[in-house]
Length: 274
Ligand code: SAH
Image 1: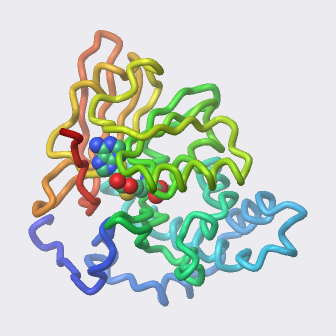
Image 2: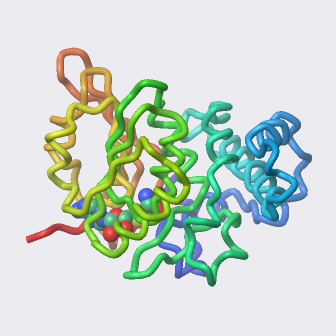
Image 3: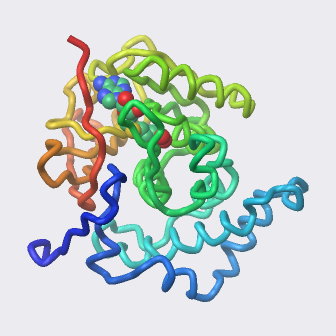
């Protein structure tokens, strides 16, 4: 089945493009024509709250939620998650993605695609952010480590769901920019730092969940070590020129690791400080 997956190079600028849509022959316009999911509309309405009337992106955000739900259904057999948790969808509905994309891409802020954020890096495709968040099973009260702060968007989505988010970014101006936006938006439960996340964040370990948003050639051992028993890690594994796969690792009570392979994805590489 995998061999028959067709790859679409049209969206060359996206680094985290999921090719699933091509394989399933679902194009965005068709997705938009799908009937509105009442529950999603409700989530969007609730998350928007009183500010909704003033938010020019309300409609686009609601359409994005529908598209994410449709993709979740269509990829459910491979991800094991045909419907994402309501709280994950509510977090996506709430976080203002337009604040995390460069001004010139404002009109594309709620398109279901990655966008450049400078320095050769990208803000991930919203469906992928939702999927990775879903696969993490991030619970209230938990502490999460993110490697690859990037725009800060994924960190903000997680911050809606857990107690504390710790996020590491290797490119200083990118990390500083994300920290400033997260501060402007009032996120007090996100701690960021500049550095190489390959070694994790020992001072803040152990973590209930670890999310890596850059592709690693292998799972960094330090990250496995910093996961609590019962903890989960979601990480794209594979080289830049290879097909990468999202992997879900679960640390068992005895410290052993179970690994499940999820969808093929395309992320920017995890780079190293030398
Ligand atoms: N989570 C981000 C997407 C980030 S793209 C978002 O929501 O926008 C991946 C990011 O990982 C890039 O910003 C890249 O600079 C960063 N990165 C790559 N290697 C890294 C490393 N070793 N440690 C920390 N960050 C790294």
